[in-house]
Image 1 (spheres, rainbow, N blue to C red):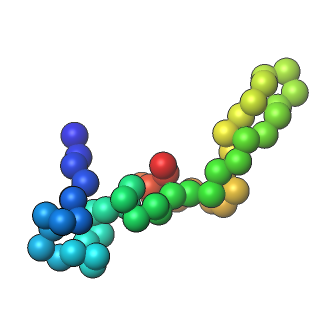
Image 2 (cartoon, rainbow, N blue to C red):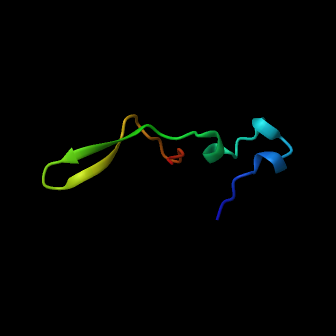
Length: 54
């Protein structure tokens, strides 16, 4: 389990790199219709291994 820092309680403040959800950092995603499968969630850009996806 990983925990994200809380802005008001982190000594580095806005410089903290462990606040991605709070800062709204996320991959560009889109919904697409796939024949015979239904709706799929697709990435608009290449997502590298270990990259954050929200």
